[in-house]
Image 1 (cartoon, rainbow over the protein chains, first blue to last red):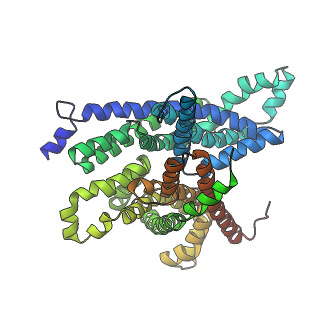
Image 2 (cartoon, rainbow over the protein chains, first blue to last red; image 1 turned 90 degrees about the vertical axis):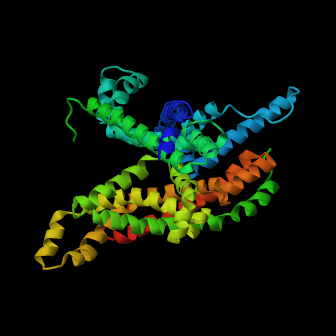
Length: 237
Length: 230
């Protein structure tokens, strides 16, 4: 029992520091991926809400594909697809051999693409929750379409979007474990490394599970706080 | 750029993994549903000794990545081989196939139990009270009043969960099972044609998911004959 505790300590021979650093990688990977996803999601939601056929079709195809296809497959597409393209470019410039994409950036991009598809649905739903009369009021105040969305609709929309975004965030955090397959040393990968070199897989995967659980719980609190703040002084109808 | 002949080569190769994907998804959805229903019903009584462990189970399985759960069960429990052999359970935890089904089932049971719990609570109290007033036993009320209504209520939420499970089976490829995603990864590293393989494998998953959603929508419509269809 003592040696198990020893494995996870921060001192000499312990994997505690490595696991904590890896948790930091997981957290930053997830946060950046989620933010990129917010951008993709906002663009896609805008496309879905558009009256024109093409943007609406493109946005809905994006959503259907990346919410319907396994995330692992999307990660392989981006990593191998990107690396293969890079290798071709490398060959043109006289290089030889396989050039791999940087794992962290690819991970952020993959999480961005996947979570963007989910976030688009959240934003779209939240948009409809904002009273349509608000846009008429904006018009009567002489605001342009862009101004009325940015200044009036979006701030109110976020209030409705927060619970859904909280769900997507939890999804993102757990999805980030899949980025381990392209070699990024985040929490999951670090646990695999520890498990491999100490032959104590149970301890390491249990520790990883506990850390994921803690991160999920802590960040969940942030979302609940944000939601309470967004609704202060308001009555939910 | 994209050549059709290549698709005709890879599609049969990918389809060879479909039976395994279907088996993993099918068994874990069925086992997970049975477990989810038991967990949801066990929480109705509000007995602390029952509710507390279930809540913990649900929170743990919803709060950690499926990949970690799979690794914990496949590699982690492998460490306890002598004790598992003594218990006669080693055949189960030795095979990646059973470990994958085990992990997927527990995972979907945790999510599913929350969906079903919400649906059961959504059944109007008055209906249950009426049933009691008619002298129906608790079991009869459950069978004839609560569950039929709850199941119908649960369909939209549960179809999302089923899609997540179909997607979740792809993680089995990481513990060496060659289902559709595993084969796709192999093809990509052999042929270096990521886009074509993604399109073909993605089409298989989208077809699968679309079929499931259509079936569930049909089921919901069939269970809701009075609702005017839009």
